[in-house]
Image (cartoon, rainbow, N blue to C red; front, side, top):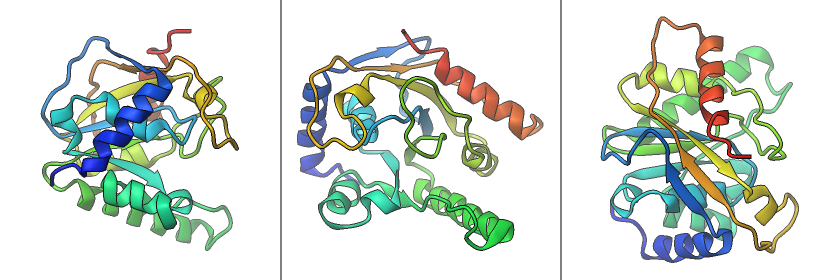
Length: 212
C-alpha cells in the first residue's frame, strides 16, 4: 500500500513544528518487519516518529493509536485514511472483570498481528497512555504477547524527547521547542524469558536513549 499523499505533508509539518533531531544509536534503518516501541507523552508522537523514518520505510509502517481519541471525525481520517493506523481500544478497569479484560487484550493482539501481516511494521507505545515526560511508566503486557505471536520481528526501542512540551496535554496549539527522536540498537525476543523480565528490559532499552 502506497502512503497517502497527505501523509508526507503532515509529516513534514510535524517535523517543522517539532524541530525534531533524529539520531540512530547503535542501529540503522532496515527494510525488514519491525516493531518500533517508544515512550508516549504527546498526541504528536506517532506522527513525529513515523515522519522520522526514512521515506522507503514509512509506507510499510503502521502506527498503533488509541481508538477512543482517534476514532471519529477528522482525527480518524488522519489516523486511518492518511497514516493507515491501527486503532485499538484502551482497557477500562472493572469492565467485564479479569476474564473480560483478558479476552479484550487477546483480541487486540490478534488485531495487531493481522494488521502486520507478513510485511507491515508497527509503531507502538507500551506504556498504554501518555505520560508526563518526566519518566517512562512500566510497560503493559501487549508488547510481550505481540512478540510471542511474531517472534521473528525486529524490535527497535525509541525515545522521544520534548514532544510533551511542544504539545502539552490539554493544549491544541504547538509551542516551539526542539524535539529529539533516538532509535536504539535492536533487541531480540526470547520466548524462554519471563514476561516481567522482558518488559523491564524493553523499558530499560527505551530509557537508555534519553539524553537529558
